[in-house]
Length: 193
Image (cartoon, rainbow, N blue to C red):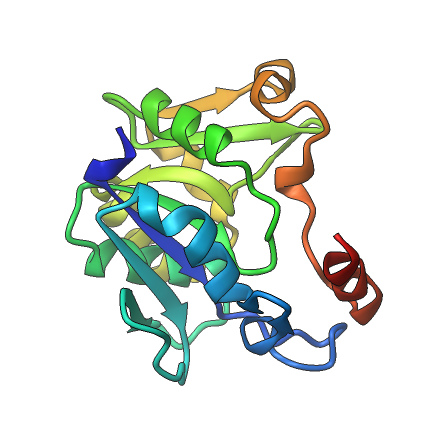
């Protein structure tokens, strides 16, 4: 299923709590971007890293500049979908290094005839670990033009499959896919794992 999709990694955050942009952080397996690419890239037709002023990554990773000046993951999703060569894409924040490939495959398979397939954990959408189709581009563009930057605000205008937590836990029992690295202490945890 995923061999017909694009992996979009969002690298637009400033990393204020981390002290440096997260996409530049190094691990024993390369940068966070490279770690995600090694783990998930083989599942996809292409891998895009979206943000501002990005440097080139290794072969197989294409960088895409944000198309709007506003700082928001919604801008990254819009820019990535616009640049994608496929209709279906999996969007992931660069600071989520533990995402399980099984969850990715499950969300992509769920996105048939829908605009978005998004997990719900703890009663909240996880929009930066979700499948999106190009059909959502016009709705995102309208939101951005109106100054709406919150990702979940677009969902009321799209065909969305909200994957309940019990279903998510079937493929990711400990919900490790949703752990994101925000501080140097959390990065140290990644090094130990």
